Amino acid sequence: MFVIKCPHCFEAREEEEFSYGGEAFVARPESPETESEENWGDYLFMKRNPKGWHWEMWGHSTGCRKFFVLKRNTANHTIVGAWTLAEARKIYDAEEAIA
Amino acid sequence: MKKDYSIWKLLSQGLKHHEGWTPAWRSPEVKSSYDVVIIGAGGHGLATAYYLAKEHGIKNIAVLEKGYLGGGNTARNTTIVRSNYLWDEAAMLYEHSLKLWEGLTEDINYNVMFSQRGVFNLGHTLQDMRDIERRVNANNLNGIDAMALNAQEVKDRIPMINISKDTRFPIMGASFQPRAGVARHDAVAWGFARAASNYGVDIIENCEVTAMDIVNSQIKGLQTSKGYISTSKVGCVTAGHSSVMAKAAGIRMPLESHPLQAFVSESLKPILDTVVMSNAVHGYVSQSDKGELVIGAGIDHYTSYAQRGSPHVIEHTAAAIIELFPMFSRVRMNRQWGGIVDTTPDACPIISKTKVKGLYFNCGWGTGGFKATPGSGNVFAHTIAHDEPHPLNAAFTLDRFHTGHLIDEHGAAGVAH
Ligand SMILES: Cc1cc2nc3c(=O)[nH]c(=O)nc-3n(C[C@H](O)[C@H](O)[C@H](O)COP(=O)(O)OP(=O)(O)OC[C@H]3O[C@@H](n4cnc5c(N)ncnc54)[C@H](O)[C@@H]3O)c2cc1C
Ligand SMILES: [Zn+2]
Image (cartoon, rainbow over all chains, first blue to last red; front, side):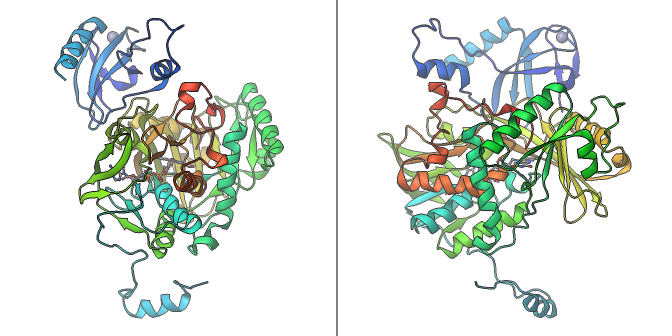
């Protein structure tokens, strides 16, 4: 059980108010028609599923009903922050650039 | 058959404060090289080692376990065993396993307390009932015992179940598999461990695999907390940690790791002589030989490796169980725990070769792999020994997520166990 602070309503609420939307920033192949089965299968099904830091989508389903992005540690449920998609993307890209 | 345990041994040990028992399996020092290394001493990993030694004549095998033997999902599950799956591929695999369960105690000479007390899968909506009929018919065509029952027939067999129309989701009927049941989970791990050890398999506890040595797409060895081990064949059977192992091998997996919880009550006199599960209201219950009600919940929806889940998930399941069995409302709960299960998009396992030669994965059993323990080990041993799948696991490749040949068992497996 953890508490999430929604970046849209700026309220810290119990996890039960939210729904989990899976790994964030999974890019849809630009031209599905010509994409290889390998890449298409990867896009549809493959997951990072890391033990550690995870960028993930959540929806505030019984609150403002908006989506946002959370960075959470899957080994101990520590949350470093929640951002709107656009804000999160910038931080994520900056981190990926270093990694 | 060699007798390791008997009433006489028990009595004589009783006079000696039970200090003279010998360990059931050897705990040797790890060697620097093996023909086959199995990662993960859960039920599936130990069964794999056992069948490799017994049926394929491979003797130089190690099973590496990062914690203690059988401390993973093997020891955390609610032990339901059944084979009433919808699609041919899955039904055949689980039925193969069920047949092995039926002779397992004799085969490994260890009482796994397999009790074929039957399993009911309840239906609460018209669509549930249509799905049940379809699944029961499919089972019968595959030679698997199954029958569809109406609500009264369920009540006749389980007198204390509440079939009144006044509940939130009234029971309309059920599928019933008489040959299904439960087994003692610890005994399965210990029994396979002893039987494998007797064939010379080295079981190494407290030995975590930390990296894989792969050269030109061929596995060469493993880096472990007890040093480097060289080998040309590795079977990875690490349940909830399979994505971590896959990452070490540079392979992508369609897995998500979720907490799955269960809880047991204080011990009661015998009141429930079968297994009752419901996908719709989301709970399942049986009674252990010790008298505890063993109740399983659903997964937490987020991914996690924390081996604990959220209380609201348990609350939801407890509510469902009380609706099915109002008389349980005052039963006190004793213990609660979680395990990390590796779920796949089609609720079916992956028992497969990989793009790394000599590296095989057996994972994705998600919320329902205990029932498959002997069958899974049996076909995985074949896959490793022959570098080719057994006909029964040929459909369960990692490749199916690229070719699109998914085996959609969500109806029979998605929630139920
Ligand atoms: C609460 C709960 C209820 C369930 N109920 C049922 C049920 O009723 N019926 C059913 O059929 N199934 C059920 N399941 C699912 C079932 O438990 C699993 O599918 C099955 O046990 C997985 O296979 P295993 O036994 O080999 O896994 P595990 O026992 O988890 O074995 C994997 C082992 O790998 C080890 N490992 C991981 N990483 C490493 C590493 N790097 N190095 C060395 N070792 C490593 C782990 O420590 C672990 O011991 C349930 C699961 C849970 C959690
Ligand atoms: Zn909100």
